[in-house]
Image (tube, rainbow, N blue to C red; front, side, top):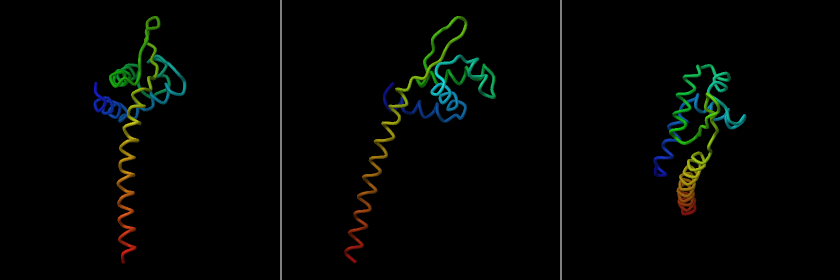
Length: 111
């Protein structure tokens, strides 16, 4: 998966409120099973599993079998890639806005 596709997959996965809640829960409390996550959310275990599969597709979580269940943990690397992309786009816009401000200042000085 290329960087552009990886960033797109992260944004698509994080577009859902429940998936953001799952990410926040895994970030704050550590690895959990779908059953444990469902206990904290107003949705069924099956719905949590579907959200975890979407997050796994974006490589935001990884699973490890523990007995009969899978334990999911956050994998922050794709978030880092998305944040780097956002920072680079933000820096580009900051530079553009800086050039625009300089042009406007020059125009005000000329008048």
